[in-house]
Amino acid sequence: QVQLVESGGGLVQAGDSLRLSCAASGRTVSRYALGWFRQAPGKEREFVAGISWSWSSNTYYADSVKGRFTISRDNAKNTLFLQMNSLKPEDTAIYYCAADNGGVVRRSHAEYDYWGQGAQVTVSS
Image 1 (cartoon, rainbow, N blue to C red):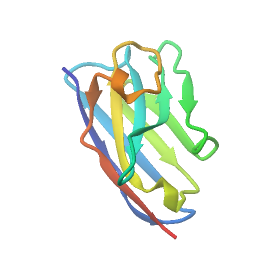
Image 2 (image 1 turned 120 degrees about the horizontal axis):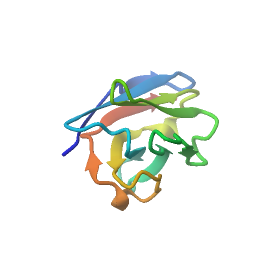
Image 3 (image 1 turned 60 degrees about the vertical axis):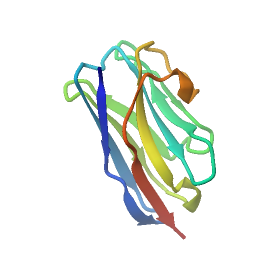
Image 4 (image 1 turned 120 degrees about the vertical axis):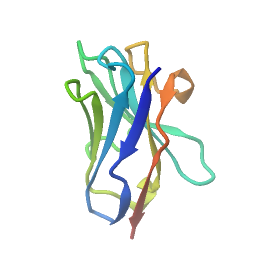
């Protein structure tokens, strides 16, 4: 079993930055693909960014965040990060980290095996 705990959410103004962290425990996640998803009120959960297992650490982004968000992983700390810059009001959502033991990034939330509890990010205009 893998437990995931997000931190770093909050309330910011448009144009500000935030860094989300996701600490994994129970098992090392170096062989897992890791992803960030978000869900706004009344909307479906959507893919934000993903990083493949540690051998390649290829990164993937949703078009809406490309160039503004950066996903990274620290295998020594078993932790995933999401650096979010130039935040917009439409980035407001609950952000979830997820782990997929397949190792390859997939954009469907249904493919992921483990989920964190979520972190609220609110961006005011």
